[in-house]
Length: 134
Image (cartoon, rainbow, N blue to C red; front, top):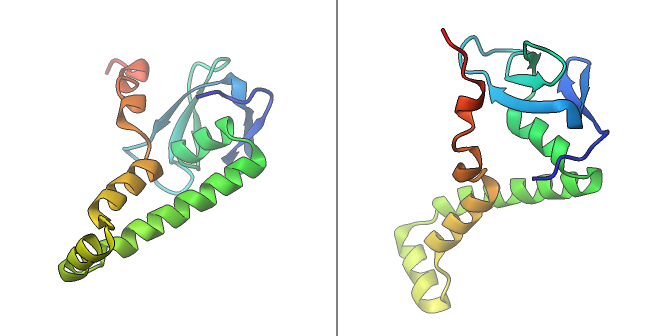
């Protein structure tokens, strides 16, 4: 994942930060609510900035170009909607599509889900980077 440098990233509620100064994004689990979705760690502050946007939306803005970001977002949304529509198909129709048309609905659902969600191994091991002693 390449962070685009010198890009202002919108954190919500009028807060912006340079993309290349953000060193960590941690979703807020406890006391989450309006205006409190993500802890944004930056190199110049000891404490995180509270952002009202999700960690995923901030990460996307840090790494994707403007037109590309819009197009990728639209494709993700369309793929997620298609996965939902495919899950509503009856078992009979799924079998007909598979045997008569060669379309494996379950395989397409799995493939599209993989494209619309963040890979687990990308996030694996990141939790302990910002663990604080209690």
